[in-house]
Each structure stands twice: as C-alpha cells, then as structure tokens.
Image 1 (cartoon, one colour):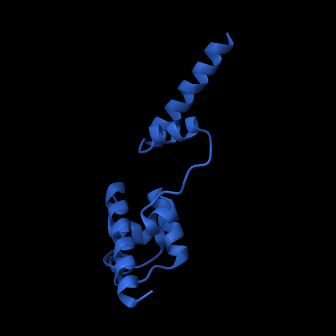
Image 2 (cartoon, rainbow, N blue to C red; image 1 turned 90 degrees about the horizontal axis):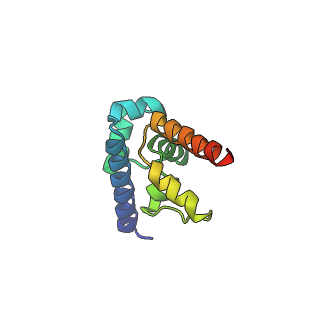
Image 3 (cartoon, one colour; image 1 turned 45 degrees about the vertical axis):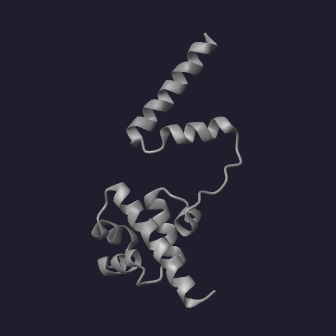
Length: 116
C-alpha cells in the first residue's frame, strides 16, 4: 500500500471518528477526557494528522457505540443472529437508556399478558 493510500485511509477513518463524535453531541475535550488523551491528540486523530492506536480506537468504539470495523472501513459487520434481533437492534438504536428500559418493560408486559 502506498503512502498516498495510507493517507487517504487515515483521512476516511478520521472523518468517521469526527462524524461519530458529533453525532453523539460530544466535544473533542469531552472525548479526550474519556479516552485519557490531550484534546490536541483528538484534534490530530480527527484531522488525519495523527495515527490512532488500537487501544484508543477500541475505547472510541465503545464511546461512540460503533463497531471498530465500522470506524476502520465504514461498513458494519454482518449480523449472524435471527432477523428479529436485528430488527429490534435497529428499532432501539439511538434511544436513551431510559427509553430502552421502557421497551424492555413493555416486552415483559407483552410476555405476561400472553401467559394469562
């Protein structure tokens, strides 16, 4: 892989990381504190000027709730489970934890009403 290919790939990863941070509504300073890096390191990563370490990418993946594969390639990994689980995962994506808890309570309610 040539240097220009590496630069392009790093730029694409940087854009995905920036977009994920912005989608979560977090500042570079907040991310830096969560990851344990200086804000300037986050700026460098998001501009493509700084390489990202695997451990940093793993931490960012958890914070942004995106797979490492997505952050690296722009593609989500293929889902191997039952289709209804994939549907439910898509349905609750982006909900707050409070909303997810409410969905779980409703599922419990539906199970209980069928048992009656």
